[in-house]
Image (cartoon, rainbow over all chains, first blue to last red; front, side, top):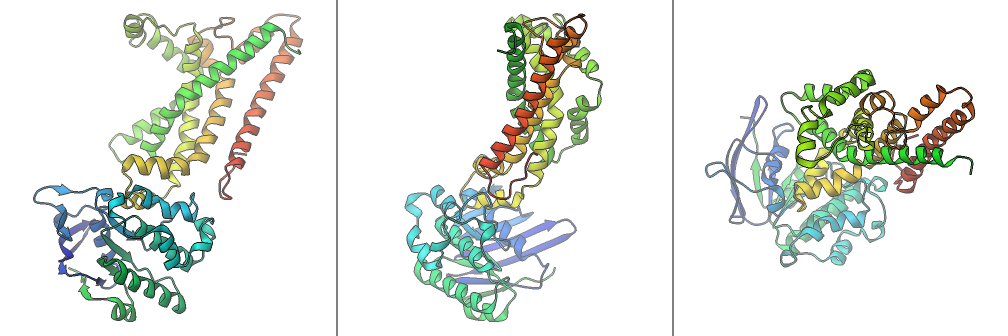
Length: 209
Length: 232
């Protein structure tokens, strides 16, 4: 099992609970907006502590409320492409890409810098600042930054929501390439049926409890 | 040059006192600003009020409190003298402490504003990319807070150069030791026939203050990414 997750998150008055175990490839996390999909991703990434439960990815336990284990985010080797991208505004595109790469243990690297830049077609952007990028460009840089940090798995939070049809097709092709080339398990949060139909190997529905 | 050796001494002492004051105050101001901007803890409002106290208290009161605390038998002065053999009374170090405390609220405010403007989600992103808490702090928070830190340095330096009430109350006016520019101007004004010296020292004060502002503007522009807010 790539993802073996059973957690309950308490955020103010609302409770988010989900339990799923899925294999390799892309797991799509679906559900109405506000149901807590981003919170589930944050919990897996270690940015939000669930009230109870267990998070196991690729056989490694990241969180277990029974033993009190909770790895800090930097120890989870988890590549996140945030919905709001979160590129570092004071760094160039190249420095953004190198940020995670430089901190990753060399033995775990999956993608070379040049290869990633070519795959995402961002070579001409390297000297620019994030605030000068278009939506599609920034999205590709965010994917590249996560990929170069040598993650064991990827979390993609609505990576296509802000893009037009042509760009969406390009990014979907990139995600398929990543799945094919690096065999990275991924969780994809998405609203769009066509996106889920094309990319998802497994489907997890998040409902209000 | 235009100033006598004594007057140069006063200017040098002023720069030394103000420089030391803000150099020592900066780490403290940054820590306080970070705690006030990001921390959630009981008593936060009390800490906030304490930090702002020197801004609203009469400086003479601050000087008097320091005098009581650092007197040879005072609650801070006694242990300092016993364990380290240090006294701050009538010393330039005391003048620097008074200046640092008076500059603290301005420095904390300016740094706090810039920390509050930083999206904490950027630090969270840095954590997922392999940085520990300190790493994210050093590579994301600190560089993004730079405009506020520069503003704090300039405001703090200017405030320290002008510090009068707390200094004269705490460490008195000792020529060559605690007689900074404002104290020297005040003392000279008491002596008939010294108007030209007052003019020269006042002019130096204006030049130093203006210089601080210009340097800060230059620092901000030099590192500009096109989005830095300017001090001026």
